[in-house]
Image 1 (cartoon, one colour):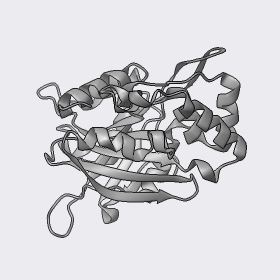
Image 2 (image 1 turned 135 degrees about the horizontal axis):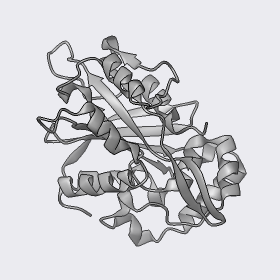
Image 3 (image 1 turned 180 degrees about the vertical axis):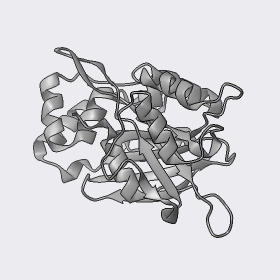
Length: 267
């Protein structure tokens, strides 16, 4: 496992860029030329609640570089469980890891996911590069389509494997913007499509967090029966507010995260 948090995030970022070509354009649009003010608020990763690759296995890579567990979240409708992690250095990005509750789905979905996970070499999960290693299995487009009917999350994870599902611009750190509505308008003016599920802005000052996101890029994914263009990763934008004690809120809001997941929906 990595012993350097910055190396880990740099590798995650490069891997994310490889399937999210719009991310560079978002940087140019939102960042100021004078300084590097596009700061990453958090990343998110997806997995399955199968012991070999469960949430805790992914979390171990972050615990090894100074992260601690901070909150847990339940997504009943999507059948997901998640936790978020924070680093002892508050300037380091937060990490949001979710896992699919596989046993809550049909037998065929369970069989498919277990067959994919069975193909992963046990040692790969603790390797330095596991969190940005992509898929460790072979899957055809028909299997992907079958998963999609039951769980967009399952299909996405089966297609793309282990990588950052999204990075997040911290609006608090931007020089050119202070309001999430202005960020959203700039993105739309720049030709980006936003995730409108639950409204363009998810959350509110009252819950101390406002979030929005682009719709995932569409890129060619290599299946065993050829390449198919499907949604890959997206970019999120987060504005955090101060708690009554004056400290900035660092957690997540389940109701908002629930809608952010839909940024990768097939459309």
